[in-house]
Length: 111
Length: 115
Image (cartoon, rainbow over all chains, first blue to last red; front, side, top):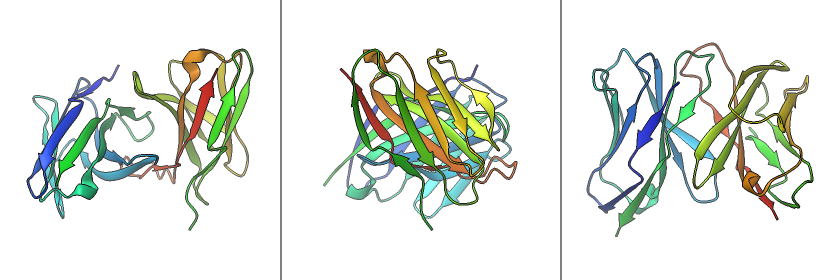
């Protein structure tokens, strides 16, 4: 079955770029997502990418997909203290399959 | 428009008891999924309901069950509680238009503590 892996912690300085990495095992994953979870809150969808795309940009967020290596990354430009949260990578095979989440990367932004 | 509402927010139960958690999806959303979040295991998929039918199921024992009502509200039940069931239980609802870009909206979760 699908397995999604992420590094658990990342620390960056305010104003720098953050890059959060994710690898997934199932090459048939068609939909890949990035979610953000702030303390005491549920998950919020940040962005998604289809497997037939290499890159997607949305304001400060850039998602890169390397299908060959099954590697997904989320780049946050000009990281702010409000970006401190846990970021989850997730994937699903079809729109009717369950979404499988990675363990989450805890991003700490140092002022 | 109102978001996903989970009740109760916090719950303390004793081992061996049973518990029912409730999730009210966003109006018009027919798909409801449940997840268990723990520090050690991360987010684990429990089950998904669509139009009152269980569409997907995770790898949890039969003590974990759920249902969905005609108004799309969903409940999950855990019987014979164990200490390891202590977790944040998250519910997510979506429109489910049959497309993978359908956003899932999460509730704030129910924090269950088993003592």
